[in-house]
Image 1 (spheres, rainbow, N blue to C red):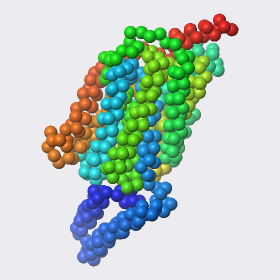
Image 2 (cartoon, helix red, strand yellow):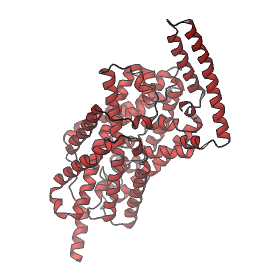
Image 3 (tube, rainbow, N blue to C red):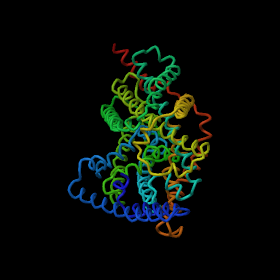
Image 4 (spheres, helix red, strand yellow):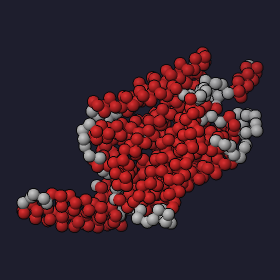
Length: 506
């Protein structure tokens, strides 16, 4: 199955190298008959692989059989799968990022982040071709050994865990507004309503989904999640064109540049973060080559940038300097179209939450196996079929890990009402190192040319850019979190004005 997915000379030579190393290791202390048998097997395997490659070429020339067509993705299908993994809930924070950076400079920064992300995704697959390991943990272990694997594990746990906290913040903010629409008296105690919503959603929806044995089936709901995001985008554009929200311009409304460039960068990188799915999409491609992968990456990042830019321009043009970290917070509580959008957004998030929880749980499980059961790191950096891994049985201690992660996110989420702060924190401390710093460092370590050669200079620039933004962002953002006075129960001034006008008309 793996041979049918890996069609490059580098990958095939790596498989042969592993077979030869394994056979050489078993030659010690064995009898002559066993040695001859292994040599015969060694001669047969390349022939079988060659025959298999010939069958694959014949299938591609003639369209292939039904099983091959269902298993491997064409270039458009791979692009769509990648778009699903990129476009998500973080796009609603783009108008807030434009407010932090300034409208003009923010759009320029959005283009820059998309371009750098495109390069880093291509760089990761190049690293895989160099070392023959087609997984993120695999290339980090190949480049920096166990320490690279441990650093990646820490960041890969931090990123989805902070994402789960942001999901709780969004669900609490959005669904509480919908409930107040039906029960207006609850608006006097929004804090309690918000906490109750997060608690009941966690217990009644999130925990059962996260304990679901076959989580891979939930990944197929990514199309539903993408459809929800597209619907919300159309609703945001419709509200802009209708002119329902009349916001007074201030001196900051259309300012070209602001000083909060670093936090805005964190939000934008978070919106384009998809590096954990890179090799899953690459290995699912039919005739996977670097040229075809570059096309998939360009198409996917280009589409994701278009969606993010439309969200940013439409949202910011509507609310300008009043844009919130969660764009849906800007809309009035009695706006039925946007309340429906809030429900769709919550559904989209709840379909994504279990997958993020699975990533965090598997990181903890791998560390337990490593330090408690003393299993080698290579056991967890081998390329595996993710559908089989996600469909594995959940044992008792895995359930305990899952519950600990879910309820830890629930306990932390009420500490802030600001989605923008969580997006900035995750983008600066986890997304930028995962997207820029680690791929660049891996390529610099494995590429044979000199450090300042033409081949390595772009990767070096990627590492420097990521490191500078992360360090400056941590210095600016972390002290500000202590005095965070953001609240989600505040009714915007223009909503109060519209409510008073409606009362007078009645």
